[in-house]
Image 1: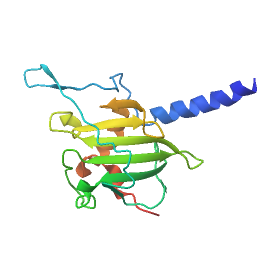
Image 2 (image 1 turned 45 degrees about the horizontal axis):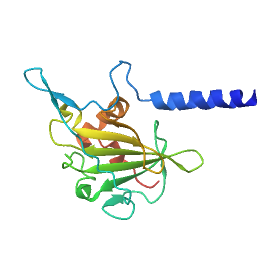
Image 3 (image 1 turned 180 degrees about the vertical axis):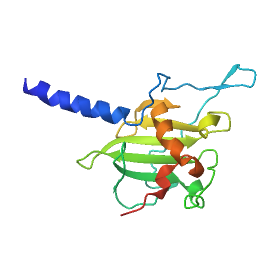
Image 4 (image 1 turned 120 degrees about the horizontal axis):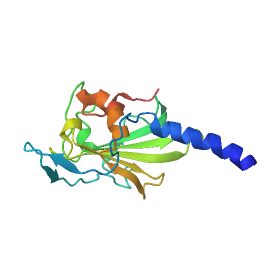
Length: 175
């Protein structure tokens, strides 16, 4: 019985965190990779991940030296950006180049990486309505992709940062 009392609150917390930025509609939040053409036909569009397991040591930088407390749904984070964003990231508006990547380490309350979240800029036409970003939710060690593509939960939160090409974390610095 003690296990049930422990699991229910844990399950509810996980469920609430998962739906914090989700949409009220029932659209697919997974790996839909089609783009509607002017004639209402659909074209298959492939996406490429910019994730690199060595992101902390090469080809990426972070504006923070430590984990930073931010707003939900990812309350404790450290974000790394691909080097091709170096000259853009502090501008008030910018468009990231194709292949640009942001890797967000999301931490739990104990200070452990809970998961790794990745955004990679795709060629025009991948998801024109949402800046052509490909999203990934990865395991804590980065080896397992748990969800990828045009993830509605990610899109819903990142839309507010359209001026910074859907990268709201660029304003996060050490506190």
